[in-house]
Structures are given as structure tokens and as C-alpha cells.
Length: 113
Image (cartoon, rainbow, N blue to C red; front, side):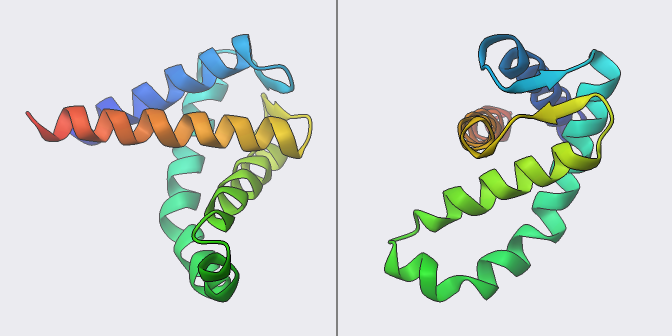
């Protein structure tokens, strides 16, 4: 049940990002739910491999390169999910940063239950 709630929170976050952040577009609830699902899968399966492969750069930048990885994955998901688009790197960067913060906060709040 907690996973479903986090998924819906991420979908609502995507809709809010599309409304308030220029360069990110989401065409309705269905696109937001699918994009949140794909983002979760990509972050669970692809992100750890990329973090491991870029470990030297991540160590040199004191972990800040992880933000770039998140932005690239956010932009990557937008490239193949219909109804979800990102105009460039910087909207992807700020969108991924907001998604990370909201997802972390949701996990923290739901962990207490």
C-alpha cells in the first residue's frame, strides 16, 4: 500500500512540475501515472548501474554528479513516454531535483506509519 501511495505522490508531483516549471509538460493524469511508474522503474534498475559506472566522477565531485545522472534519467524517460516531455537539460535537472526531494520526503513521512 505504501508503494502505491508513493507512486501517486510522484504522479501528482509530475503534474505540479508541469504546471509550475517551464519546459516540462504532462498531458493529464494517465501520462503522469505512466511517467511516474517508468521513472520509478528506471531509478530502480538503471540508476544503480550508472552510479557504479560513474563512481570516479561522483567521488571527485563529492556526489554532485548524481544530480546530473538523475537529470539525464528524467530526460530519458520523457523521450519515450507519450504525454510527458522535457524541453532540455535544465528543466530536466530542476524537475529531477524536485522529484527527488518530494520522493525522499514522501518516503520519510510514510516510513513513520
